Length: 422
Image (cartoon, rainbow, N blue to C red; front, side):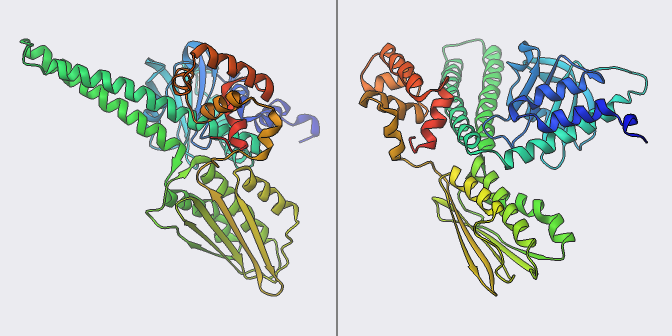
């Protein structure tokens, strides 16, 4: 095949997906698929992005209303990574969909109202599967190598989603519990109606609680599960490199890890193990996780000749990722005996602001409002707590946006968290 005979449109499509930022990968994938599989909307559901598990492109009435609960239910119905055509509830009503699950990451792709370009045999379906596999792998890789700013904003978004979900849960739970009490009252004589409505309300209450727990699960990962995912990530290396990798598991009852900490921990260990395997005369690597209730403690040790350099670019990149989560990385290199690396990742954001916050020149009241924002409080709650009007809170928030040079509450919260405010 000559250079001119190469499938350049396809290669350019693959390059566009591979290079797309996480915030644009849904748009790029949908543009790539449209010549082969039309759709009214494209939705990606991935737990790798804890702050933004949904990535969407297409009709606004669909992408603005599709819920995590709907996507999670659809994914649970898929037995493997094969394409599935059928009807599913998306954005509040049944729709025809094409759904594919990426087995390694459990990420889900959904196309609503799919329209094959060539229904006869539909050869485009193979290309859809191929491009989705590339996109899903790139999402994993981009999250693993995400810059500190993304990690901070993702963590802020995760905290905000938990807060909003908890608030909605409390509100609707109270409503439903009141409804149940009224319908069970002996003063109501329509027994059949009372029984029917009671059953429906009880089912809605269970569903709401399940949604709350499911949302929390997205931003927290049991430490044992996180470690098992690390073992799976490193399994090909242990199988083909000839190097023995020993895993010392964390306590089963250890505290759950925030999503960003779990992702960072796996990425750091993978990076350290790969750096160690590049040394000569390494035959064994030992990795251990532990948890002291406040920090995830990681230790990775090799039996090489101590040739790993503390100032190597690969180690420096991993150190920056650790620092992005206010963690610490310490490395002991023993000539003739190998390298011993210790990493500590805090499970909670620091409660005290760093000295850098002084450079924002915030007034006392503005700093107090920022602290409440960083804690996930809404304007009405902040006003009540501080004893001021809601309009005054809005005034302080506008000033904060100008002084912090941000354009949204999420950006302000992410910046505050990166400076130790919570």
